[in-house]
Amino acid sequence: MTTREIRARGIVEGTAAGPALIGDEAISFLGDVDIGTGQIVGDLPSLKNASVRGTVLIFPYTRGSAGAWRFLYQLFKHGNHPVALITDTLPDPSVVQGAILANIPILCEPAETLKGLVANGARVAVEVKGDAGVIRIETP
Image (tube, rainbow, N blue to C red; front, top):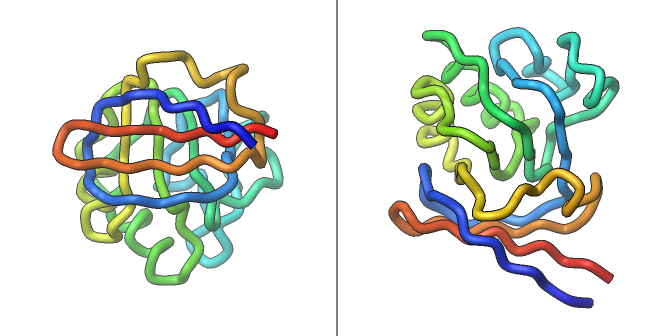
């Protein structure tokens, strides 16, 4: 097993690991994810029938709203939350607020494009300290 490290901008501190779940579309936690199950219920073709529960969720950007933080926090309270979020761009402030409350690390702007580099289900670990983040991708 080999591990590839990629630097990223840290947004919410913490460490986490889990299987990668990769989305091609922006995600709104307000409407795209069922808080009671963690299932994707929005019109997101790349994530159809997927669950965010326990995953390192990798996606291009968030679609936020003033209430997105509550839905991300409720996913946490129900035990259906992703363990970490990685976005290509700076996430919506409401999503950041929810992640802080739920202790979900967030990284953005990875030094390398993750699409095509990480497969769904691959083990990914993240570590965020201040604004420094590391993504560790395990490959066989």
